[in-house]
Image (cartoon, rainbow, N blue to C red; front, side):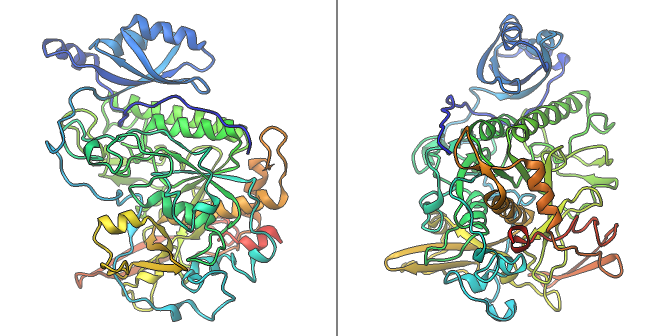
Length: 574
């Protein structure tokens, strides 16, 4: 696409957590500390009226998205929420963490995982066994034989690559933790000019626990990471799965000639908050992105409920704000021609049944906030995967079974796609090669001590491939986070094959409803297992055994495990 939209500088954001008027009044006796809010304007209201209401309540706008009416506001008024809530131009608001209470480097910092377990699971150690992938197929790339996932959806030399490899004018937005734009298996297809980072690193949470870590310890000594950096691994793996080129090194993606645009909305730590996500979505719509991949949910709530008795009134209001703001952003992008693809989730939950979630809220937006068990009825929604206009993707393993961790539900899952299952083996033993292989930033492999002095990997879930003097690193990961980008890649092929010239942005374009219809219509119909109540057996690394039984509902045309079926790149373009 040719048009470039420059976004304003961003400010640190965290999970939205509302405070009650009573809490605000109690705070008057304490030292005044500035606070941040995410404010949702009333639909149809004039932004000028909303700004006036915010100023009258003692707030100043740090960041505003006028496309859908969302703003981040700073205030020292402890009664701000109560003062602004009754304004006709204000729909809802949520309280962010306090400003100015961040400890200096090294204070109050606890260790954090590379990414939350709910978002993606590292495959771990295991023996490489190329023979597990069946008969060899013509290889597109040196590591193609390790890509069982591409074979499952026929994204191979003798499959979809023969008919369509993607159009460089088709833009795929990766809303994630960033993309390593310098990786040799991403750089040729990486659009740095259009890429944006909508986040600012958060050193610690409201309890002083480490989130992204001190800015002084960042490689660039800044909390504002460049647009071609991924200090997590998640976004790079996703981007590579979609569009690693056929260039004689490493692997190839589903659509090896489309363009990748990094729309970073995820923190280094793997959290995804509201304002960066809505900003990424509206920006995607404005610049002509064709497909976006969203392998995450909006923190701090895995499920958002507006009337759950287990939640406080403030928590319910916060969750209502998340639902409304995200849906506005998703609808905006959809109406601008963006096909929206999302990971279904990794909790092994049936979203159509009542479940118990003990993981939320997963971020301390105010001191002392911690997860608590909640009964979740089907009326609660996970965003963005349960939103309107979004294609929800479950995960399959090498055998084609639904992965043991993948969320499911008849009517929830639209399609399925290979995301890996390290226990999808004959006897339930762990095998890392049953996960999916994609690009991995060398800087992370070095920082995590995974390389020998000569640069070769010393762990079995990391693979290196070199061409001449250039080497690329790759890592095995599993999750619906890995399944969704493979479906997004097929969606990009559909736009490439059937799209028309985009007169506004250049490149090609195709209505999202058409893309979704082709994606579902060409998926391989996959019935429920027999019996429908399927028991998964896993022999864990500590020598214990775990079992779980999950029940598939529906028929061969559509069911809770596979939706309309496993996506098929060849059928989609032939």
